[in-house]
Amino acid sequence: IATDVAAQFAGATLIEADPQFTSVNFANPINGSMPDPRPAAGSPALDPANAATPSGPGVDAGADFLGAFSGTNWLQGWTVWQIQ
Image (cartoon, rainbow, N blue to C red; front, top):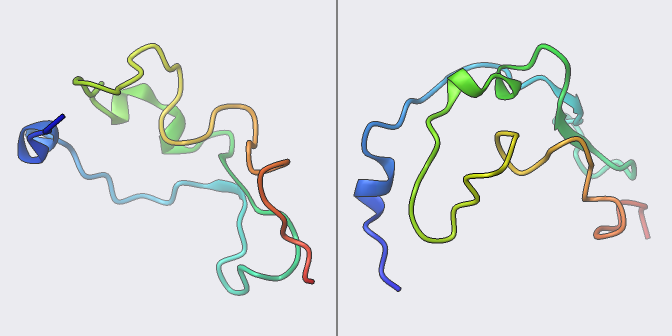
């Protein structure tokens, strides 16, 4: 299935703001502790007004959150962050 990428992003709005992650260590990202990239309370990523609802094949228009994380940190159980 071909997708017109330019059409998908037409009219997109770029927001340059701190996403206010719950717990992400950018100074030492591989420090052995599990990051929590979910938006913290007050994050602009929690405001649906900051993003247009995309359309097209493969888009979950029923999602009630922006980005890859809702209230659950799905990294737990899928990734290992302990230093081996």
